[in-house]
Length: 589
View 1 (cartoon, rainbow, N blue to C red):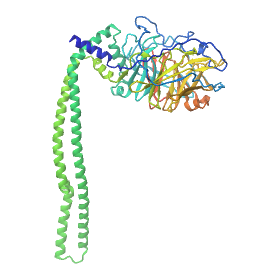
View 2 (view 1 turned 135 degrees about the vertical axis):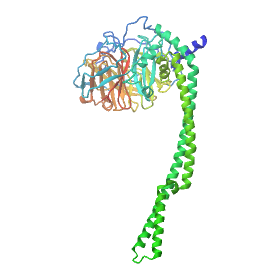
View 3 (view 1 turned 90 degrees about the vertical axis):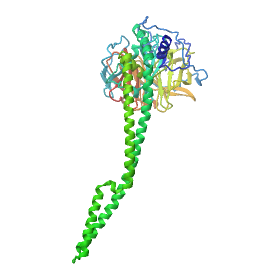
């Protein structure tokens, strides 16, 4: 029994993990200090994301609680995967930069010392404090996130880039400060909503369930042992319930077939009745016409009177027939009545059996509750674990570059542990993954060299046509407080990116992400307490006008990690600390 219990404990902890092959993102980096008047000045302290002049993004204090670990082995293997390499994907179009002359919103840049949310029983509710060229936006908590879905000793509840695809939300779960390792978590949105886990009720259930069984804490370890006992002792009841549910499903199909037979014969009977009614109506009409003619005769002989009486009797019989459907189409009625009675008997018998089975399920559930000491988290664990796909820990870099390409239904992940200007031997590496099973399908390695300045991408997104975009917090020398967008292509045919001439004014702090909204064809730039959106077409055409740039700012003093959109244009915002997913109350402009 002890061995069996330990086996179930092991299976429980890995039940949600899908084995993925390993990836090696190892990159050698060195500094480069060349300057040019027409290059993005990422050497300036303002334009290096997470540089030494400002607090690092997502930085938390280290120690035993977080078990920071840089030696976690990677788990996605790209050996044999097709690779596209470019020695320089930067297309120099001799860009004549200009700053887009927009009015700036009210905002206090948030560089660190973030507000911490302690109470998961009350959903957060944030409304924007200012907006330019757009309306206000409100976000409410959809779910609080646990300290770790994969429950590894290195986890400390740090979530990074997020996307929505295939009615699921994906985000990168960091394995600890400075590790550059983590896992990709996929949660089915529709299934969670069916469980009643939304922004109205049980917004804390994900965190409560997975924190409850987190082995990194003493109480979590004890609960994990209790869970293994619970699994062993309730296995017979859960198996019985599964078998019964299969039988009930088959039985319900049989009931549906029985009802279909009744409906089919009723339709045949109705059609026969309809035809008989038409024939009857015709006979009544003829009867009335004949009587009318006879009554018009000036001389009504005895024979005529006798004929009228006879016709009236026939008329009464015809009317009586009209009220009795069984006599209108007796053959069809007899068949329908026979089928109805037979199927009704069958349906009653099957419903009785289903009721007995449901009673057995109720009994089994009572036993499961009794064994689990009526702890709802045990059953919730089973329900929720089925909705999750979680990769093993792998090399994710900083984790901000998780992106989705609608044109091929693939997910892209880049290692971005080096930011801003890098050495001339640095290759950006992006791995393209299948969105369903997370298996790698292609690798892209490329340098971005603009006149001796080599850049590391920190953001990435794709539009409906598969065009790629990323952004850098910074601009050419003497153009401070700006943000440069790049657009281009990344596919088997090649990799190239071109800077956009119009520089966006950037009053925020860190460059937290670039994302795409398929609902309105706009790009979104994310910073702490700030969202900027721009039409994709104007970005590609280098024709961004001041009115095209929408600013929305907040006063949460929290770290904004990612923004993604569902098919209706509602925004899903991942924030720290405590980690949570907030959903906009209306589609975002």
